[in-house]
Image (spheres, rainbow, N blue to C red):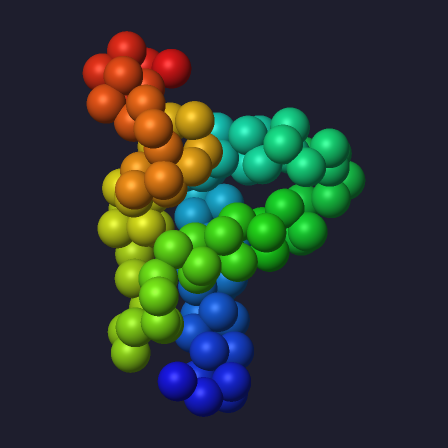
Length: 98
């Protein structure tokens, strides 16, 4: 896939992340990202939203032709923050709310 296509897909995803933030739907993800990166959730909001968009973008081997929804991407992330495919304790984390 071309770099231009990847950039456009990432930009579309970033815009969706901003929309979800404005609706207050990703506050937990923002706080988790702030904690993991050491960034302040309010002072560094743009950087955090960009990191979230980049992290979600990386979940795909290649960018889809239509940007996925946040729900589709978040479904692939374990509660510990790792991809479900890479988390050794995904079942325990999901069932026990870790």
